[in-house]
Length: 110
Length: 116
Image (cartoon, rainbow over all chains, first blue to last red; front, side):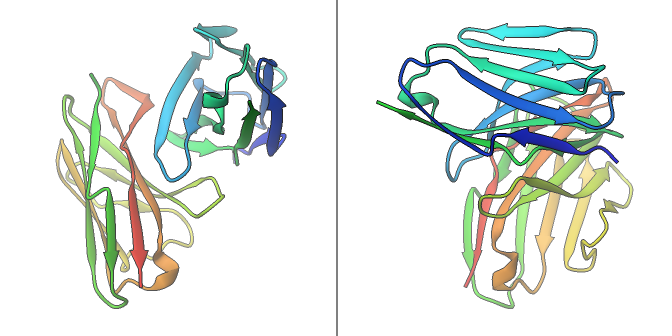
C-alpha cells in the first residue's frame, strides 16, 4: 500500500523567503506525482504534475523535483508572497487511485 | 479542457434526510470517477471508485448502503448520502479520468455538506 508523507506539517516564513516543501512515498513504482494547493474551505488546485520519466517541472515561481529511487519530491516556491499562504498537498496514483499526503500548511508573513 | 463540475457547492440539511451530489465532466468522457472525503484539517480519503455502467467499488470502512454512487453516463456520477447524520458533515470531492489517461485525474471544486 502506498504511503505518502509530507514534512513539515506547518511552515511560517517572512515574505520573500524561499519555501521548500517535502513529500515522500513508500512505493517508487509511480506513474506521476502531483502537487496541489488548497485554500481554506476550498477545493484543490493542481499546481504541477511530474511524470515518472521527468526529474523536475517548473511553472513560474514553482519548481518541483522528483527522485523516484529515493521516493521523494520537493516543491520549491521562490520569493514567497502572502498570497502563497495555503495548504499544499502531494499525491501519487496507486492502482489509478490517488494517495494523498496530509499536507503542509504554509503561512507567509507580510 | 478537462473541466469537472460539482453541484451543489454547499448544502445544509437536517439529520435523517438524504442529499445528492452531482459530479459532471464537462468536456471529456469520464470512464472512471472517484469520490473523496476530507474532514477538517485532514487530507483527502478515497471513498469509492465508479466506472460507467457498473457498480462502484468502495474502500474499506465506507458503507455502500449509506453512500450510494451511480455512474449512469460517461459525464455524470452522483453520490447520495442517505439518512445523513452530523458525523457525515465533510467536504466531498469528485475526480474524473478518461480512458485515454487513467493516471491523471481532474478535480471537481468540491461540495461542503453540513448536517444539522
